[in-house]
Amino acid sequence: MHANGACTAAARATARAGWAVAGLACLVLAACEPALQPAQFTGVWKSSRLATPLHLRASGEWEIRAGDGPVLQYGVWRLEDRHIVWTHRAADGRLQHESNAVVSAGERRFELRERDGSLTSFERLP
Image (cartoon, rainbow, N blue to C red):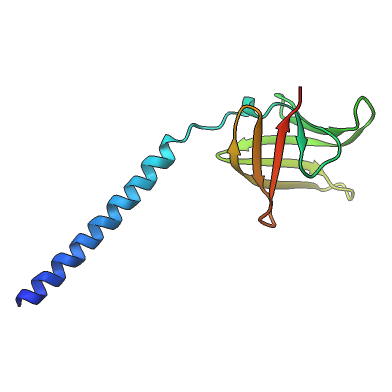
């Protein structure tokens, strides 16, 4: 093998090792994120897309209600990895499921990625 061939092989090995280290670093950073818990999301929230509050119950039920008035929409929700999965009955009687990625989550606020790529933010109400 020529000296140039040895240098090229060494450069390729170094590049592969660099990618392996970068991949490992990404895995470690992802593992450092605290796991989301359903209790973080239970409560009454003001959505950037809704005029009325969204109620997320610990039982897994959700509802949109106009103050103390009638329920406008309801269903069930669950947390799967870093997604909230919403289920509700459509007008034709079929169950519909929608999954939204949790982009950020804190004590008083969280954000979801919608199917169209936009963000919806939620602020906890007292």
